[in-house]
Length: 136
Image (cartoon, rainbow, N blue to C red; front, top):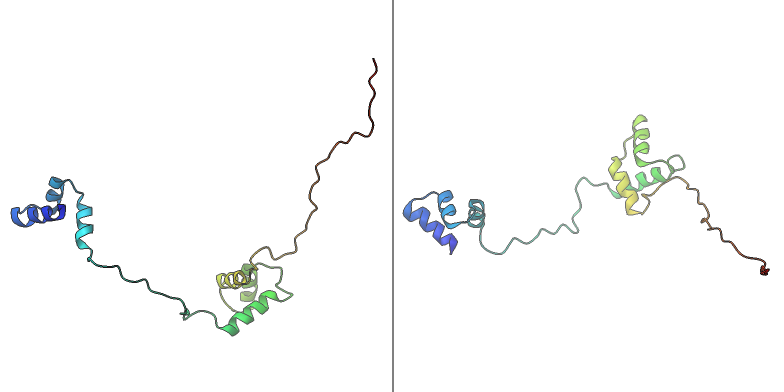
């Protein structure tokens, strides 16, 4: 109803859209947003399941990268340092983020070095060993 009123004010009377919206009490941006949208159901979302990114690593590249990351030389290093070391040797396997992504898919993104485990701290407890007799 308000949209029709604004249309009448702009078409019949010759007011501008801003003045018509102000007369009706509706923000001009709201009017433009409502009138510029096509009416009808929204477009269905594009399903990307099953589609592969064209630049993604092939299966052989993935296995080669994982083999390097799991090798004895790099097993305790972060992917960023592995990446830098390989670049120093003029060898490029994939980006650092791809290395992290490969490790994350296998659940190996935590600390790669051996971690010391400490026993749980036991709260000291005082125990009475004798019963004191009361002297009067």
